[in-house]
Amino acid sequence: MQSETVARRYLRRAFSIPLSLLLAPLMLVLSPLVIPLLALIDIVSGAPRRLPLARIGLMAVAFACHEWYAMALYLRALLGSKERRLDRLQEGMGTWSMSLIKWAGHTLGAKLDWGDPATMPKGYLLLLSRHASNVDAIIPSALFPHILERPAHYVLKRELRWISSMDLFGPPLGNYFVARGGNTGAELQQLRALGEHVRPEGALVIFPEGTFATPAARKRIRASLERRNEKTALALTDELRALLPPKPSGVHALLRARPDARPMILAHRGLDGVASMAGMRANVPLRTPVVVRWWPTEPVPTGEAAQELWLQDEWRRLDRWVTSDSLVPPPEAPTP
Image (cartoon, rainbow, N blue to C red):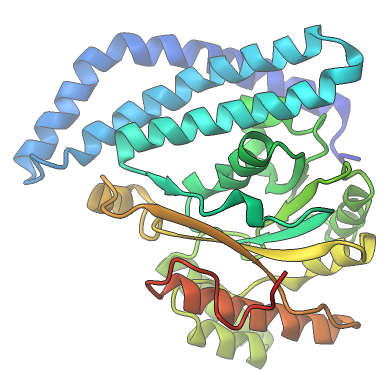
C-alpha cells in the first residue's frame, strides 16, 4: 500500500535507526551538563520559575529514550505469535504514545483531559483532527489503542518516517505517509486504498489542515489562495481565529473509499502557541490542561463541491469551540 520502494525504506533505516540508538545514550551522558546550563540561561533571561529551556531539554532526552522503548515494543510484537502480531503492534504504539504524553506532563506541564471515552461511537470512524503542534500528533495514537483499546490508522506527513518509532510501527499498522508536493493523483489513490485496510471497529485519522496553524503558515496559505483566486477558502482563512482552512482532497478520497465511515471531529485546546521553539519557550510549562473532545459531524452530502462546503462548516464549528471556554462539544452538534 505504501508507494515507497523496499530499497529506499531500508536505505533510510540504515541511517535513522543507528542514529536513534546512538542519540539516547549520548543525550543521557551530556544531560548533567546541558540541563543545568539551560536552567542557567532561563534564570539569566528572566524565567527562573518556569525554566522553559531546561524543561524542553528534559523532554528531548525523554523522547530520545522513548525511541529505544519503541524499538523494544516493536521487537516484542515481532517475536510473538503471528496471529496476535497486529494486536501487539497496536498495543505497543498505544503504550509508547501514552508514555510520551505522561513525560510531556512531567516536563512541559501537558496534562490531558480526555473527557468521557464511553461517548466515542462504535463502528468504523473517520476522525478529522485538529493539528496545532508536534504534541497533538500522538493524541489519537494514545486515545485509540491505549484508552479505547481499538485500532487506528493514520495519514501522516512523509518526513515523520525519519523518526524510527513512526517508521517501524507505521507500515505494518496500515498508516500512510503522504509526500506533500508529490504526485497528487498517486497520493489520493493510495489514500483510497488505505480505507480498505481499516480493521473492524477501527478509526482512520487525518489532519485536514496539513500543517500547524501558526501565523507564518496562515500568511503563507493566504498568499497561495490569493494567487489561485480561491475566494471561498480565502474568506474562511480570514474568518478562522485558531485554525487553518482544511484541505478537502484527502478527506474526499477517504470518504469515497469508505462511504460507510462515520465522520467525527477530534478537537483539542491548550496546545496553541507551542508549534515552534520560540512558542514553547514562551508557554512552557503549560498553564491549563489540554482538553480533548470529539463529536459527530453533520451528515455528509454527495458531490465534492458540497462536501468541501460541509468540511468548511465543520471547521467553523471547531474553531468556535477551540476559541471558547467550553468543556463540552458544540451545542449545535447532532446527537450520536
